[in-house]
Image (cartoon, rainbow, N blue to C red):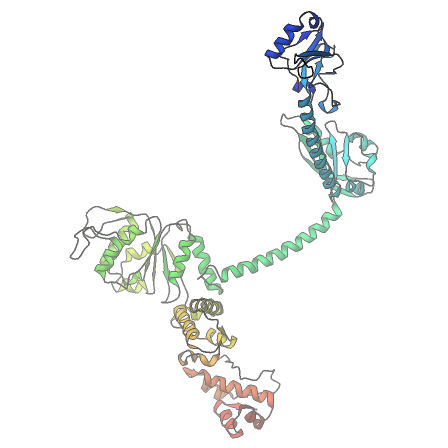
Length: 602
């Protein structure tokens, strides 16, 4: 900052010749202006200051003194260069011809010097920090001025090029090329000339080839102020590329694992581990954001409402209401009034003010029509109108009402069969059958069962304030059960086990008998905690004829399977029938009888 920036024009100044002849008038005017110091001028040049004193004399009369040695400074003097203190509260400011142009208060000079010094320290610290950053950078850095003269390089640049820093500083980029420091024309010089970023390869006396990225520094007025070039070692880049390829490969593997885990538990209630269910929720996720009608098909208890809720949560209507109704739970007349509402006095017992229906309640959101296959054909006509015209009429009303909601329907029925029986309208079927999604029964997706067991166990542990665990053999047995009631049956069973079993661990023998009865061929093994562990080294097998007799039975008690496998494993471990009997706590003749029963031979 220059002194001219704080120079002021004085309110009153006097010629030196006036001090003798007009002394009283000068003092009077200074008192009127409430000023104690004024500049003195001699033929347009600085001549010091005239200062008024009042308390230094017994008479109390003001006394003025002329200080001719009060300094002056040129207007282009840097404030930071002015030496203080001075005796006077102001100094003179003159031009290059020593002509007086104004005054500067010494207090302001001191204040500005303090501000400048504070800023200088800040800039100095920033400069030190920037130097540290540049010097510690792994990439080589080269900085030039607007003319292409190198002003700074970092140690990495010297290391890559094999050239000491002092051979760079003060040299022009073209000069470095002519001296062989650059084996090709300077990329940085090209960036300065073309005023754009330039990237290319540059070779140095070390013989190594490096990638150079040069960028011109352009101010807000479009003027080039310099350039910055970063240099990266190609050898290091190749190593980093190999590492990147490795990391990308691992990242893809992790992403696949994460995707798999996400698909296993898509939300609080959605579990999809099996390929079939992953496909179901993939399709649901794709159509969620569109207002197309979705028809969810599947047996009772497979999770049709859960899928409908998943579609709502992942749609653009997720902030709107999600209204649900079971069309098979209400009589036709009551279902009509619930869906479409009614006007005042529409029927006996109707509210005097009328009532909004669920379609109105679902405005801006979704309505889930569960078990739509149970709906009467008369109501199906009104639902068809909603799908076609997006309007309906209340019970007892005459004015059509517009509706803006998405419809998701579900049923466990075979609608095509019901169409043949005249119980479902074909036109409504095709209106609903825009995006059909079939949820497979639980018996067709056993891979989902372990995750569902854990989910329901956590839910009911939390609900009832207890902490039960399930033995892995129980999970294995449940995984192989046919589950005619699907997910609903599994949920109810887990809650029953949690609240009725006293022990902290749910074991195989805690399962109810209906679950322990398997349907179909018995081509699997049931384990029990009492079963001895170990690899079989003795060849033990059931005869083919007797095995066929067992596997052809329609149903077979799992405890018989457990007993048979327990004897097989015990024979494998202990070797003799007598030792097996001792281990199991029965006589050896009992063991022999059981072996004959199950067709076990040694």
